[in-house]
Image (cartoon, rainbow, N blue to C red; front, side, top):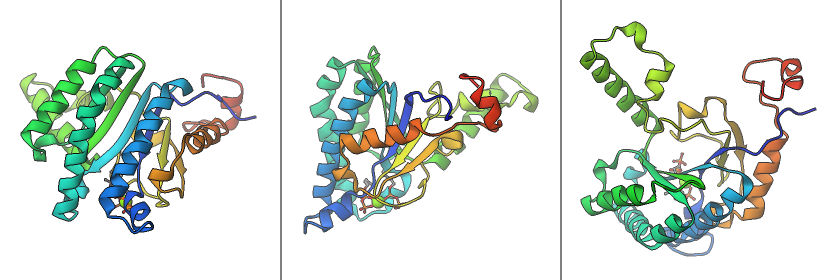
Length: 246
Ligand code: IPE
Ligand code: IPE
Ligand code: MG
């Protein structure tokens, strides 16, 4: 008997495969990113109905800055346009937006738009939409370590007070529960510097489908697969079977 067949509360997705999707159609990579945006919109729309409370989407990694300038510019432009177009609908639908990542490389106008989107959507209670832009797991660990060191120095704390919860509170994801389910589309079986701290015990699901082709049905298949997993967190199967809550 599989344990705790509940819906995942937090789903984190690496939306990969836009470029290959475009290339297979003889289109520029940017067209793949545009289509990828449509796929993301649909998953965001469907997520609350599946009991998901937090949806984290990897939109642009710290390593993606190394792509050709034209693609980086196109991605930034698309991101800005999408934010402007979607924000009202997201707010109306009770979606709270939270950006994680190093924003310093983005144009000031976009940074302002991100701050505004976070402020205006703060009351949203149906879904927390975490968008990782300029994000890298190692960046997050480093900035958290710096922040904690500073806090400890200012409060004159000793290193014994450096524990997991003090560290967690300094991460960009602070206050969010860890992802229950991690999905990566596009065929690669890797984490690519996504939520390194947070994915410690997430269930991993890989799909060969390229992100623009990832449908709600395929999303549901990932959720169904998750329901069949037994999450043990280090315990024995017997311990899990007799306690729904571990
Ligand atoms: C994911 O698709 C989107 C971003 C990284 C911004 P890719 O652009 O990585 O598409 P592939 O992997 O080259 O097909
Ligand atoms: C991961 O995809 C980042 C995003 C989807 C935003 P990449 O396409 O950049 O990952 P690698 O380079 O194949 O590992
Ligand atoms: Mg890729």
